[in-house]
Image (cartoon, rainbow, N blue to C red; front, top):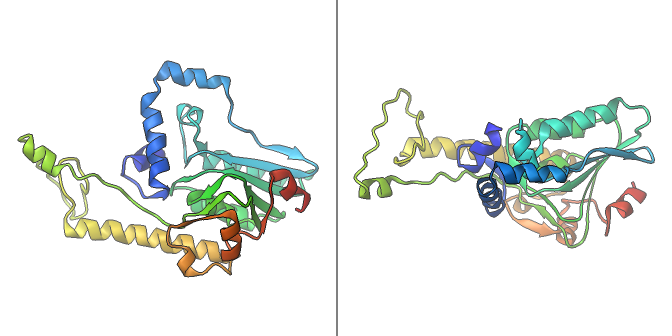
Length: 261
């Protein structure tokens, strides 16, 4: 739970469009416990098998170790996705594995490992979206043998960011001075009421740059035609993504994609 919560509040690097992250955070704050219980009437899509193909839905904001309430609010846990892939890998009746993706991305933790699992799976793999496969979701989907999208879908957003609000001026106007007693020049970075100093900002920037470099390297392991200029955080339509090499084909529907898989 803490990875998604911390990430959406600016405490962890994010692999998701900032607007989508804010929307999810607002919804999580808006709905009370009673409203969340009402979400139980709707269930997150579960893995299933069709004609020897194990299908793993990846729907919603991505996190790791999520609480039941976060899942009720539409987030997807990489641990659950990983477990589903393991089950299909061990099932002799499953010949292929397809990821059905509709996600704007999410937090960093667990994404690289899940992508590695997809990439190293001994069975043929497909990733498909007819809506959105962005940021963390694209990191995972790009590891499949084939990546297929509908022409009007949104694909890409290969980038990383952190957003840490600086409330120091507001605290000063309110007559509040935050005193931070710490050891270690990077400790306590971003505590509310303080500003990041040059060393702290540089350290966080280096962390984001490292994750971005790892993201691009991971994409190029399978999607070798994707050029560096297409991996600067921008998104593409499915048609544009095909031209950029981010996807290997187009299909109007998931069923169409499965028929050619």
